Amino acid sequence: MVALQNEIQAMMKIGLIGCGMWGRNLARNLAQLEVLASVADRHAENAAEFGSAFAAKPVDVDTLIHDQSIDGIVIATAAPSHDALAIAALAAGKHVYVEKPLSLTLAGAKAIQDAAHAAKKQVMVGHLIRYHIAFIELQKQLAAGAIGSLRHVQANRLAMGRIRNTESVLFDLCPHDLSLILALIGSLPTKIHCAGASHMTPNIVDFLTSFHGF
Image (cartoon, rainbow, N blue to C red; front, side, top):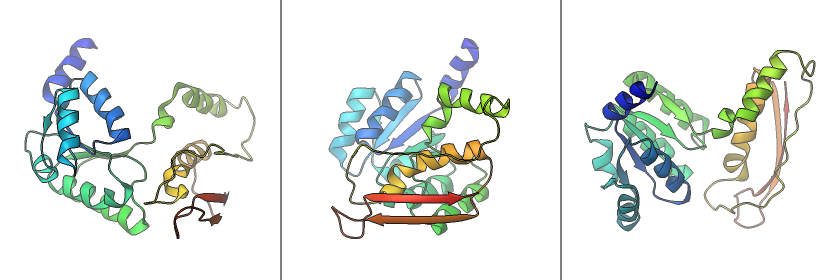
């Protein structure tokens, strides 16, 4: 197992686009795996700081995307930029890991899907809680019938968190909860109802109640 991991590390090179708060977590883990090769950000000084902190080469975004030595690209930028960056990376022949949300629109998500199929590359969305040992155990217990039939799931996000001005709370926090619920239920909802309010930024919902019927 160790030998295989060493072989993978020797072969794989990953680039990171987005040197912000969450990008730092990703850069740290990629560096620990010894696969982080390059970092890029729209602010060159951020990329330079990451490059120094994680022993990676700071470059501009276009250079990173078209670097033929890079196997995959991790995208940890503001949500509105995900579509264009993911599609460009796929078109350049890279596998892509993109932080949630995948896109802010269904059309954007389908465009990424189409680009992945055309390039024959993988796209993964950063739903990290899906891989938590507690959730994996919950799935096992549910499949074994330990709690009977699943009839109702409720998720509450009560902490304020970061107030964003680029996407609504539906795209900021809800993707994790919805990912878990969909994994547990194993099917898509047949009806959805959402009601929200904008308190901080006009037209950006920061309080939301959502109901999904299955």
